[in-house]
Amino acid sequence: MLIQAQGLTKTYRMGATEVHALRGVDLEIAHGEFVAIMGRSGSGKSTLLHLLGCLDRPSQGSYWLDGKTLESLTDVELSKIRGEKIGFVFQAYNLILQHTVLENVEMPLIYSGVDKKTRLDRSLALLRQVGLGVKVSHRPTELSGGEVQRGAIARALATNPPLILADEPTGNLDSETSEDILRLFQELNRQGTTILLITHSRDIAVHARRIIQMKDGRILSDVKNDPTSAPSASLQ
Image 1 (tube, rainbow, N blue to C red):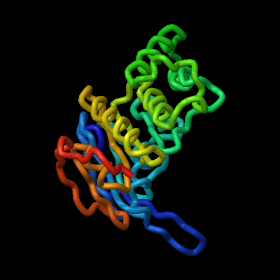
Image 2: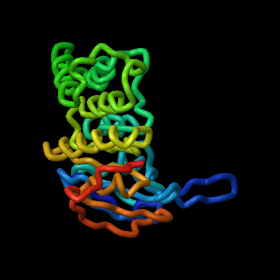
Image 3: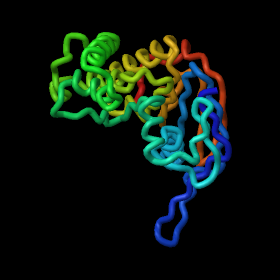
């Protein structure tokens, strides 16, 4: 099992007020799954992603990633786990505008201490895989939104993590480009990458093989899905 969570709770304090973002979430995700977590704003889906991505700590509960419990790890140890096990894809892309798309993809490999030739070969191969092989020297400002997101996906794959966490990855894209990105995720999943996608839209969620619905910090439903029946229009 890649992800195991038991009783995950997250409470934020805003002055004298407590906000219960997660209320005891239990979740298991196996290697090789493609899971969509959907719900409206305030449902807890992004909070859950932050906990699963080791970007935040739960108020209560336990979390195991790839068989390792994370609750007692230091911030430095959690950062190492993120670098080795998790690739992130965000709605806002988060590429560095001053760098080329190739340099952006190389960056996680630099932090991991990979030698220059290996990281160059790896980054070029990934950019070809996501369809940016002819635009490696372009900066993000010279690319379309879909191309920038493809670059972000290549960067997320740079260290060959077993898990990709995607937070509203098509939120800034038109319908046709969104379809392209979702097909790319499906192809990566067929190649063995586990994908957890956060979305507010059922039209996006139906491209996954499993759909989890959240509301008020709890899981309402968790069902298998056939992505071959997903609609090809109106993804926003």
